Length: 110
Length: 120
Image (cartoon, rainbow over all chains, first blue to last red; front, side):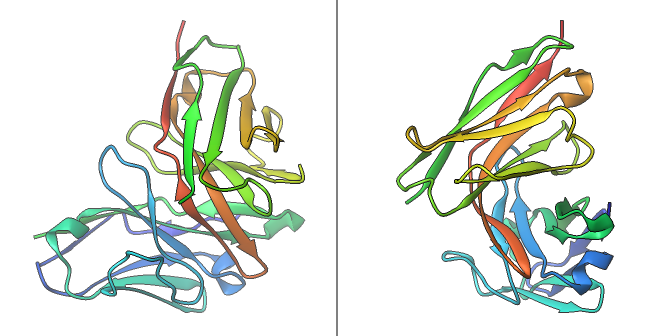
């Protein structure tokens, strides 16, 4: 099956901009969705589709895509953005429709 | 506002079947896909499978031989059965509502998760 690859850890200074990336062949065909997960909590959807935010997600979160890479950008990172972030997409490798997650990126806000 | 709640045994013996139920409240189970996802301790998220309210399913190929997801629209619930469990199936299990169209798949509502430990 296809895979989605994320950097295990990324750090950003408070108030600065950070980009978290997700790479995989499936992203050439499907949009990624992004989830934020804080310790001991369920994941929360932060970006879906081309660049859509669910109600209640701050507009400092945005998404983009190019080729086989999807990106989640946080513009003006806040302390409360420190969390694990996972990408996710459909996958159609091997003639089987499936769903895949990236391995997750731990974001540290310094 | 739709809410999801997982329920089921927190401890399952090796080789037995794990059974969990997700109850949907605040909305109808109809017209949506519904998914199970798990997260082993200290690890990332793993998609287990999804079911449409009509009953059609799709499973993770790595788990397909052991997984069954079913739906009961009369109770607004869907369920997960995972057979022949081992310690590797120890995880937090989440249920989620899925929105899926041609070019995307996302899970916009999640349950809080339930911890299942496989141990004798």
